[in-house]
Length: 92
Image (tube, rainbow, N blue to C red; front, side, top):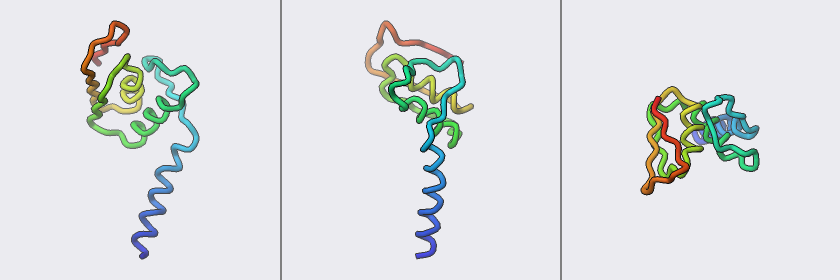
């Protein structure tokens, strides 16, 4: 029981950092229009976890990938089944 309570406490502390949206300061990120905190959440999670590799499925125009990349020093691979004319291709 004590281990379960400790795990719950750790989860609460981890997830509490995402309650207040963190604005992505990186000027290379794009696509955020202020109406949806989704991109800021992706940025905050990447910043907190610092993954070495992120795979983004469903690139669309690349907004989510740009926010994931801004939050980590790891590699971001973004994949989509169609090529859109308005998609951005960035290699860093």
